[in-house]
Image (cartoon, rainbow, N blue to C red; front, side, top):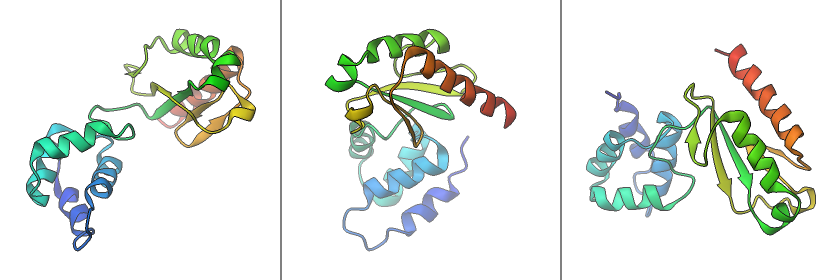
Length: 158
């Protein structure tokens, strides 16, 4: 069972705002890591918006998630520039290394693998982003080496 005390505090910070729902959901997700059914129900009660509308917003925007994600979220760019620069091979090597399909999380909770349409760094394609760090000019080998570094960081902090 989740402790929902912070939901109330987050909602109070947006009192008087015209359309605070997206900001509330962003802050709640930052607090809890994802938007669980329990948390979304609590938000709906507190802001007096039907749960169906809250859920609609939470599932419409790609940066919201209703499922737990890994400590490191890998977003692989899938735009035209990355595609012509072998992003498919990079992604395949990442999938093999992690043993994941798209939108899956490793059983240890370290990595989540996602596609994104564009990271705006076409000049250094192919590109991936891990949390807030961007990596360009990737090769399959370079991508795996980067993931190995993150894996070591994760084990060192465990």
